[in-house]
Image 1 (cartoon, one colour):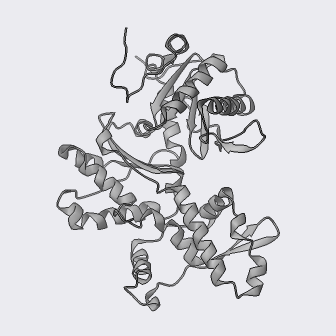
Image 2 (spheres, rainbow, N blue to C red):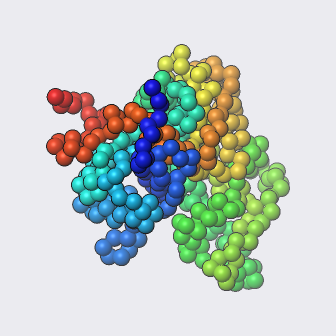
Image 3 (cartoon, helix red, strand yellow):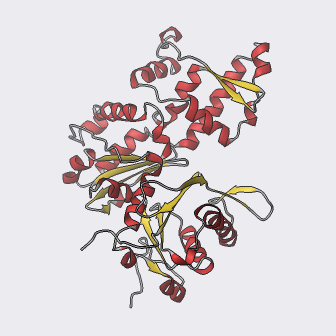
Length: 388
């Protein structure tokens, strides 16, 4: 029995993220298009698809957004192909159901398969067990998967992702501008930090910032906490000139480049960071699954593509594991990271493309006829489902 379905019309795969949307076809090695998750509303203003006041506004936004995808990028008839949607386990029900209404009622797609975005990375590796961390734009989430089943009590979520880096980067640039206020030549060249949009901050992050190693981070933290003298600061990385609007330059100091991403690893008042999320998730899992999960770590999301991210996260895990908070509860010897066969920012999409090419797709999908009769979707969080 073949594993994949041979079809003239492969399914369309959507991964609608908070910042970017990936779309393409089942069975392909990468998305055809990666575009911002933005749409123009009736007032002509550009807004994020996830920013809505009510279900009616969301319906109109999704309709215009998917119309843009179907007829500007994919350029095909929606009635001819099944749809696979990679969604988060915590996707709002109103978003999920409104998306289904748009696809079934307006675009008249034959069927829709909602597949968990934390499960699809395992499809790319062919394993059924792993601890999946998604570090995207708005938040970082960790969910253990064992025997293809999410362990929900191990779910961890924190707002430590790309947006947090952007906010920290803006603060650091403001402080850097204030420190250089006496330099008139530099002041002429510096654009106001308030003019930096999210798109510009993201570009600065991608082009200029990096994750420093744990030893330098500890030295910097010791100085800022007053435990060490400022002379103990490690040498600063070189400054860079970032071109802005074609007529000015923004000087980004080495300290800003190095410290912008520290927000991901600096523990807050509750001593939480990316590394503690993984360890806390392991503690909440059954004891006989912890070793296998720790040896199958999968990191997805665009933020984890920053230089030095993997090395720093691994060092942080071992450093936290040596502390009494975790050493008494976890007897783990090694953490091992998988390398998916694609770039991290579309690993979930690739898993959805694999799921969409399987012959089991029709049986797992919600058909248009079924949805039009009940006008509801099966939901894992509903304790009672009416079945006939």
